[in-house]
Length: 307
Length: 294
Image (cartoon, rainbow over all chains, first blue to last red):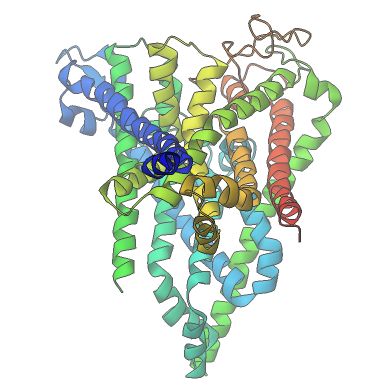
């Protein structure tokens, strides 16, 4: 009798195991959260030290047009730390690549979902999926051996620059945007299409007035994802943009982006020096921008969900 | 009439656009393979790189890539699995869950160069691990965790609740249900997710240039003691991977046959990614058939 009472009063073996399992899995989850928080803490603390330790003016940093942190301006005794050329370079390649890629991505996605479902699924789908997984250095290498020489022959100059960067990024984000757009278009209910066709719409009217409208939030999300990928891409862009931290005057002169300056510079500067701190500030801008892209995606999702 | 003309024009336009896209994508793939495959040989895949003269291979880099990939997967898989189990089986809809989900989403959208710099700051400099395989593997883990977690969570979510209810009805605790019922059922799609993410990790370079380093010291492939400095298994040695190698030789431009080597290395990367993608699906369906006795 005592034995049974004891067994009933005690926590069972199963409960004990469950508690342990729950604790283990929760630890793993918390570990990830800690990683995210520490990335922010570390990068922000290093990035902000430019402003509070080295006394750099935020306005000088964001809007200055000369970047040469190891040289000081003899007139004002301040180092040249204007980051505008890189910030502008990053935004230019990102927006240009997104603008070029969007019509191509939507057109291809429409082809795959609305016009030729069978061929789309058989030929395009595997190619697009494979291209999403191609390493970015391979895109950079193709840019270096194909795109740069072609632009050199057409436009003159070295061939390195915003235009080459845009073309490489365009090809890189095209599969990303396309595959996400395809998913969105597929999730548009079939009866929307049937209703549109039933009231006499042509296929294009059905696509343009019904399917694309219904899919707009999803397509916007896809574009923002593509832009986030383009903005954060480092090596492929660095290989073709020319890496000259100058204000971009034309699309075919060497320029630079936040990521390209970072990859070139971090290894060549001494930890804790001003030259190093300003690079961390660039990394901080990258971090903040990826947060902004994230917020935009959420905002789109919320507005899309309300309907 | 007008609507019909518009329809025809638009359809033609869509055909043209997708034709161009298919052409670009196809041209790219064939460019890499046609340029790269002729350079592939047993010698190229096994001999060490030469910095200043032609005729070097990518043997060390290829080994490093696989070693880093395996280490990164070994570290990230248990963590991702645990996190996914908690998110899918235990997590309630509350503030904590929402915050953690957001954190994972943010981690997955961080540029890989930022993840690499964080790894550099924390592991290479702060913990004094130096440019090493270990630092590189941890950086790759951080890069891989959010995607792997999400893919495993999706796999778990696809298992119908009926299975969980059946487990509870038999008097199993939730943990036992997960361990003995849900996980075995989800293994095929988890494997597919793991192999697909391995393809991404294999080609990653930006997270590695400041963590695993950009040099590939000569290795003694006869020495498998992980504590010896020239042993391939030593986790504290700097290790340039295949993807980093392509980037480095192209930005330095010293190597005389840089184009040939990078074309060959790119082809290897693409072929490995292709193999991963292909085998992921095959392996998944095969395992599914085996495990479900269908």
